[in-house]
Length: 148
Image (cartoon, rainbow, N blue to C red; front, side, top):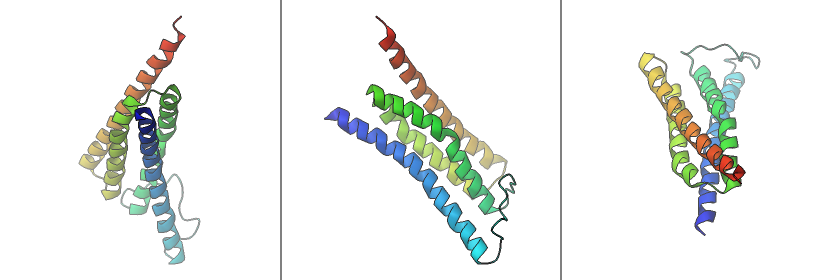
């Protein structure tokens, strides 16, 4: 029974991470739609590579993009943990990974200055360190299966 709860918990935290990305995307769609419908912007007035940190909509776009940068890696690492049935560490680390992602995105939305960028980067490093730890753990588990 414990293994089933652990697997469910792992899935829930992975869904929480993806849900945060989806939430940011819905906010972005809503904000852009309002800008177009109100006549403040043209439908093609959102160039993908133009970034003006003073514009909240640009910061929202970047916060969404930044959420995606680690999502693919996280999915592969967590899928490996689920496949191996080795989810104890992922259950411990995933809440912190999700919390660090939400904190990073929230700070991105608040504004941009030297200190906010430093704090945001700190939260990103936390995510990378924790996902790396989880990846190394899963790699060791996989390699242990190769021993005769």
